[in-house]
Every structure is written in structure tokens, then in C-alpha cells.
Image (cartoon, rainbow, N blue to C red; front, side, top):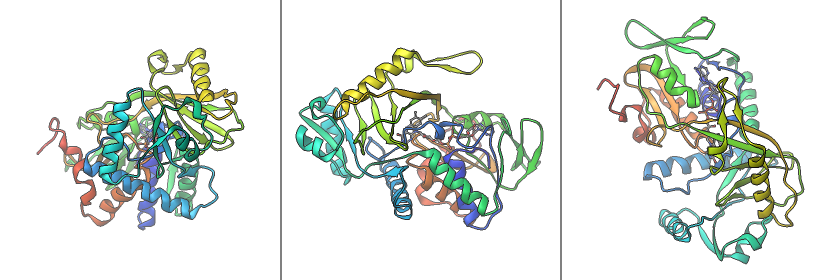
Length: 366
Ligand SMILES: Cc1cc2nc3c(=O)[nH]c(=O)nc-3n(C[C@H](O)[C@H](O)[C@H](O)COP(=O)(O)OP(=O)(O)OC[C@H]3O[C@@H](n4cnc5c(N)ncnc54)[C@H](O)[C@@H]3O)c2cc1C
């Protein structure tokens, strides 16, 4: 198993629950990739294909079960989502589509929305706003700790700081194991590549091209503050959710053009971007408490070339599964469960059929 993010760990834990031995190698520390800096809004509210909508709903279902098992958790909640856009017609269309799909969606007048979503300043809301009571959020670092604990208890072997690992291929053309950056080799009959935005590079080295649209993203974490927010807010200038420790997690796309990646791979986020984002969050909150950014976390957000998840065994490299997706927080548990089920049972899972890697025509043997 390659990759110590939510997808690698959830797949690994499911494999261990199924009685298989698992060795997980990851470049740095567990959670050092996108899973350590995710807004992790749990939702199926966008314009998705039917199969993708179903998969996302199954993803949310698994988190609800997890919450029932951890009722006091401060890192996972289903207190709803609130959404608005500068284009009111886009919001109406979103509401209509969600209603057709059976996704819980209410267009509420400003005051009703403010009562349904405590912690927001009603004065900032447009006349009507979309509320999705079934949405939630998760703090992935806390989930990773839980998964890593179970991984260890069940006898999994974790190798952190393995550097950029590569795949080993046998003379029969099947995946045969992995090699660490330092050259140490580990044989394995099955390999899962869950390297987030690094997945296309790992597969390209093995001769398999996977279209990649991974993009920079920056998560901001506030200092602790008094706020009554429980839901996830997705608004034209900022997305905000509660974060453990009385903090807020914030994210948006408007500032990405101002974020720079230096030659040494590190990132630079201008101070005025941090201030502007924090001020926007403060403006949204009831009582307008001061929001101060305590830390920011920049890096690539994994996105497959066509936007849909890539989940399944590679036809061009039997024995190797790719687990590469956008919205990997929402899919974190379900993708691991279904991929592990395929590996353990040897049967292709019908929910994964639309998301096979071989849908990309180039670079594949048919
Ligand atoms: C700012 C931001 C906001 C987001 N918002 C949402 C959201 O609201 N809802 C949602 O569902 N999703 C969201 N996502 C996406 C989601 O967080 C990711 O899809 C998910 O965390 C990806 O998990 P992963 O396990 O695939 O990858 P990662 O967490 O990136 O883990 C992959 C690991 O593999 C390691 N690795 C890479 N290459 C190699 C190699 N060659 N050898 C060994 N190890 C390697 C990396 O170091 C990394 O630790 C967001 C992401 C970001 C960054």
C-alpha cells in the first residue's frame, strides 16, 4: 500500500479487518498530504452523474455510522450546510436539481436560514439561501489518528518517511511490490496506489498515464475564538466550518492566483490574503468576532483529469489498484471499503464500475 492519506489508511484498515497482512509506505508522515489540510465538507450537493451521486451518498452514510460510534466526537458533525452564490439563478438551479435527486434541500428566507444555521449573521445573507440539513464536515487529521490506531492494533506495518516510492513490476507484467526512495524493495502480490496528487507520477513511472488535474489549494486554520457556528458555510468569498479546539477552518479559490510555489517546493501566501479571508469569515459570523489565522497549509489537491474518481485495478498493470479522487474526504471511508472488498473477494464491485481507470483511452492496453 502506498500513501498515508485518508484513502490509503481507510483501504488499509478495511484490508486488515478482512484478515490480510498490510504494509503501508508513505513519503513523509501520515496526513502530510491533502488529508492534513482539507476543508472536508461532506456533501453530495454538486452537479454529479447518478453513479457519482450514489457513491458520495454512500460515503456520507459511512460517516453517519462512524459518528454513531463516536457520539461525542468534536471532529465529525452533521449540522448541515448553507450555500449561496453571486448568481441567484445558479442557486435556484442547484436547489431544483437537489430536490429532484431527493437530496435534502431548502430555499429559506434570510431569517429562517439564520435560525436553521446558528452562528451566522443574518445581515450578510441574501433574501433566500440554500440550506442542506444533511451535510457535514470531518477533521481528517483526527480521523487519520483513529484509523492509524486501528491499523496498528490489527497488526499493520507502517513505514513513514519512505520518500517517493515506485512500483515494482514482475516479468509477467503484474505489480510485484514497491521500492522506497532509498532503494529498499518490498514484494507484494497486490499493490494499492493511494498517493493523492502523487498518484499519476507513480503510475507514469510504471508506464501508465492517468490524466491529472490536481490543483493548488490552501486551508486556513484560525486561532480559537468564541463562535456559535456548527454548519459548513459555502459563500462567494469564503467557505468556513468549525474546527476542533474552538477554531475555524477556511478555504476558497479567489486567493489561489496570489499564492506562489517557490522553486524549492515551498509555498508563499501573502499576509493580506490571510487577513482578507479572516475578515470575510468574521463578517459572516453572528456578533462578528475577530478571526485571526493561526496557520495555513498549502499544497496540491488531488483531482483526476475528468473530475471523476479513479478507483480500481489497472488493466495495464494487473495486481495494482489506483485510488485517486477529488472529494476524497467525502469518499474517504466508502472508497477504502469498496476497493478492499474487491481485493479481498476478487469480485469487481458494481458501484465502482463507472470509475475504472481504463475509461481513459490513451496509454492503456485493451
Ligand atoms: C484545501 C482543500 C479542501 C478540500 N475540501 C474538500 C471538501 O470539502 N470535501 C471533500 O470531500 N474533499 C475535499 N478535499 C479533498 C480531500 O481532502 C482529498 O481528496 C483527500 O484528502 C485525498 O486523500 P488521499 O489519501 O488521496 O491523498 P493525500 O492525503 O494527499 O495522501 C497521499 C499521501 O501519499 C504520499 N505520497 C505521494 N507520492 C508518494 C509516493 N510516490 N510514495 C509514497 N508516498 C507518496 C503523500 O506524501 C501523501 O501523504 C479538499 C482538499 C484540500 C487540499
